[in-house]
Image 1 (tube, rainbow, N blue to C red):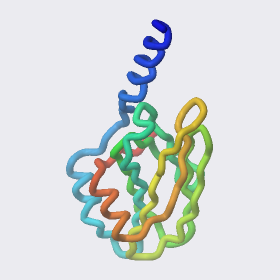
Image 2 (tube, rainbow, N blue to C red; image 1 turned 90 degrees about the vertical axis):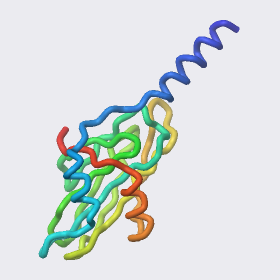
Image 3 (spheres, rainbow, N blue to C red; image 1 turned 60 degrees about the vertical axis):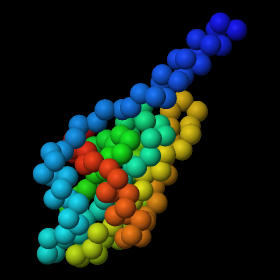
Length: 146
């Protein structure tokens, strides 16, 4: 019985902890939340507005290059040229999505956290403007870098 209590306490502690990821400045966060792509470009926002799997940082790549990590209530934003861009979330699984970026538009991808065997899994879903903005506004901008 005592072992069960200790195991439960350890699991609760692991679930309660939150992954720490490098964060962007408040200025970079507020600029990104203006949702105004420059002429000739598009923005892609990837957001993770859940606390499930909060003890784990999730590595994200754009077009095959590792760009950064997300933690709970964080997002990444990329200024990209119009065209196809592949985003991948590297967790217990590797989830991928292709976004067809259009000039002057914002695109939103929800990094949904799922239960995994040893660490969280993820699923990527492109969201509409209303849901995407709402999700991004619930988060803080994570810094790029691996």
